[in-house]
Image (cartoon, rainbow over all chains, first blue to last red; front, side, top):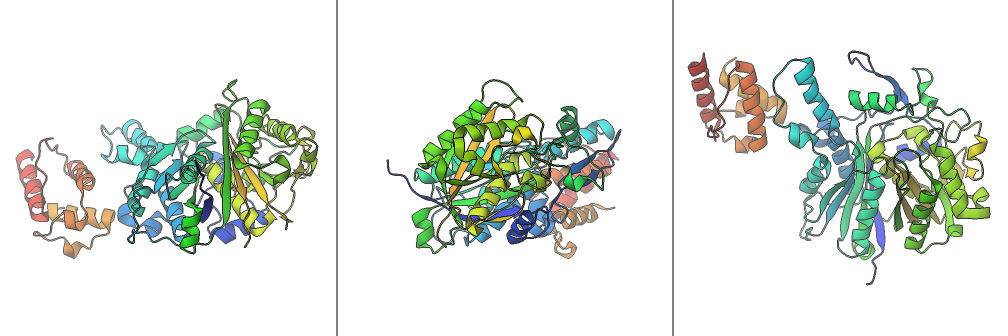
Length: 416
Length: 78
């Protein structure tokens, strides 16, 4: 079967910095952290954690009051990111003659509408009410974001959500990619959104002892992937979206092509729920290279999963060394989670955007706060400050989830 | 608050509908009240007036029908 080329024609996100896509990328290049201290008024004990919020996000302004009121925050962030990517792709929101019956959505979310359900529990158990809003089901369902996106953009093809913990949106992007490449869909909207600040969810992550701590002063540099003094991950909310489009379709309508998606590979460690294993990650990376028809030496940048946990970071570096061999020492690697945090089900999407922009702009964003490299994470070319890389040809974005689910995406630069 | 006041407040708050357009003959569907929003409106109504709507209630089509329904229930159950 002949395969279609897959163009990335739209990028959009709700930026934790508050600005647009160009602003987002310039801040990543500058090594600027979006992590802040989150202090809630929850009872019995407030959350007091480093966190990445989108404080400038105004759902009513972005979506209109009637639409926003039918959504939980995870769907609001997803819808806003999708609108932004759609506009960026130069596609009209209402179908303009061309059938969209095979255009679809593949969306990633680890937590879905957890906040909506938590609101229900508060009503019942804290406020002593006997019932919850009749909208709770449609606010809380995990496929709410992709369903709204399909409705708003008139997409008649598949509309699905993928829940694979921290790899959710990488899997979503990969599955969307396959549909466009096979010719099943001309256009796929993909990406992810999540809101991990539900009280019960944030407490659960704390209990796992993998979260970095921090106060108002120290939070911005709380997430330090690969650093000898790293203390854990920093959660964040957000939404990020990409429009994947049949190459010829994109060219025919004169669309701007940000980059090409060329490969997707998955694997499962099949060994432990939370202890990652290099062998499984190696299989995912090699599957991606094979899928893309790329050799390891053609990869010029890897956006690492790099969460800044004690266990995860060295295993990822070991996997990269196994795949890239002697060349690993010259392989530029960075973990942008050091700045935008870990968006769980939206992590793969925001990192895919960072990777595509790196290829387009020929500039590699750094791992922030990496003054003192952990010897266990040595062996690759850690990017410590933004780097101009005029020969950047192809790049990978890694997502390695709890559960041992691994997903890796491959992108290629296009000539401007 | 009377029934029309509650409907106006709800539609303004949830859908951004201007109160002066919420008149007796206005169709609820045209104001943006679909089946989900109707459920939410009834929920709010039950909450505010402390009454319970029966599950086999026929959905009102106009603002006037909604007001009549609410007024009737408030009289019956007060």
